[in-house]
Image (cartoon, rainbow, N blue to C red; front, top):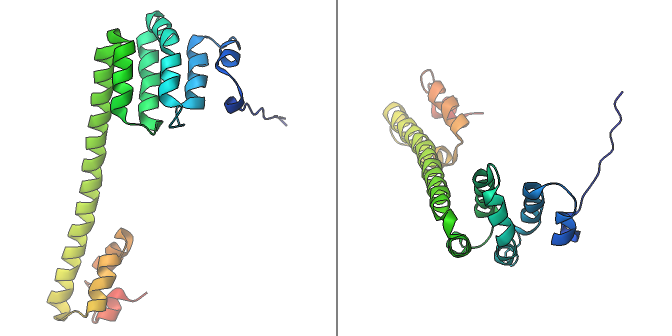
Length: 179
């Protein structure tokens, strides 16, 4: 049987110099520093300022532009600072990366729009399900008590599906909404 041991590496205790001296390669060393500092609101911008020479060196390495893009995308996604501040700092310190920055920013905006559209579609589907069920209940049973309307409004999508099926054969409101 395999026997494994876990090695925990507390990056928060290591200095920049210690991480860079580990011999992991430039990208891995910078990534370790980013992992350590990108989530600390007061550490992100100073870290980017400290890393500007190393990022410039990484930029010129083979496949370096892609590596810098991955690191910057990570910072934009996890940092609790204004993305505009990050953008301005990187544009000032790395003017050659301006096109890359704009591409990443546009990708993130596009992903946000797609997420919003998907959430909107899902919410729209649920709302349509609620309205249809309420209309069917009114057509079948005429007047609906306020508590029935409230239950339909608060129901999960799964519960709405169950009730939508039950209404086809139910003789009473309790037959539809009963557990």
